[in-house]
Image (spheres, rainbow over the protein chains, first blue to last red):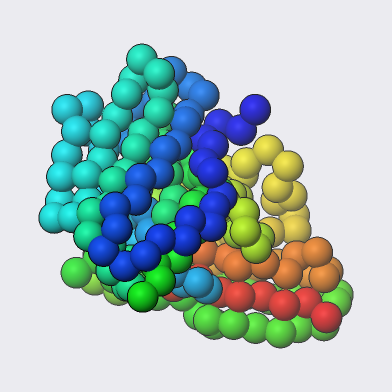
Length: 110
Length: 112
């Protein structure tokens, strides 16, 4: 079983729609959680951290469910520029090593 | 702030040759840098943790004699792929730690 699992997609979504991704992680001792965005042939960029209480940044909402060991990302009013691969990332301990999911590809269509 | 550069951005080399990739933190000092490899449609895989002034820590399955890492200063880490083979063709990404990881733009290596 992979340490961090994501549906690879692609998710084909019309512009303006709401889309949600889930990610599951296997290690219950995981401490920190993140969503990164990666455009084709580019480096990943931090989208947002995920906190236990859930957090929102504009059109993006992230939630963490420790009991079920999953993380979600919700994108509202999707834009064409949201097309990218979204990577779920987990940090196990304090040495800042990150465990990466393979990513979910999102395609926003006009 | 917190900009990380990589050089070269892409490189094509012949099988059997060695390739050096540089990772620089431009506006901060980083005692710890990370080297990742990403194959198409796969997740980033941590190859090694590079610590300034000491030996790198390699992940299981990564050959330290093939992937040489030198972190000689607080702003520069280098990864040398020795005796490269076509299966080493990949996207190599570094990150520098400054409370969080800041990523370089990546180096696309193609070995022919």
